[in-house]
Image 1 (spheres, rainbow, N blue to C red):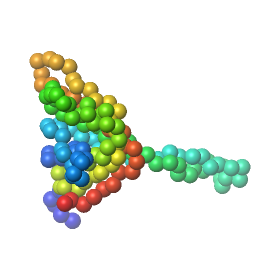
Image 2: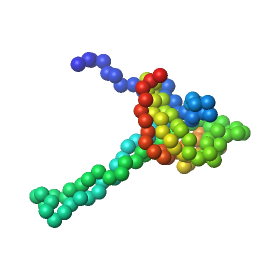
Image 3: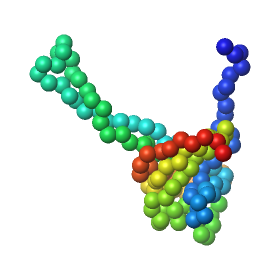
Length: 139
């Protein structure tokens, strides 16, 4: 057992959107990324002879939970995230600091620029996965 931890911070992580050329273009100045997660429904399978009078459950359908991100917002025309919102289903990629990638089909459900104030301008985006996320090795 090593005395050195393998823990890391999120600095260097990226959120990208697929381009027509087959690559991914990272969004600028992302300050927080919550990757998609995994969840599964459960269905009760209890019957009149269930052992020990315990309820029984079976696994149900699986689902990917939404990806959320915050970024420093710079008003611009065109706005890349509004264009992605209007486009609907696209392929997204999250790249971890160590280069491991998560790719998933998804669409923006919420894009909210923050308020104008004396602080920095921010925006938040929520991306709903439309299918299974794939984890890929670092390039």
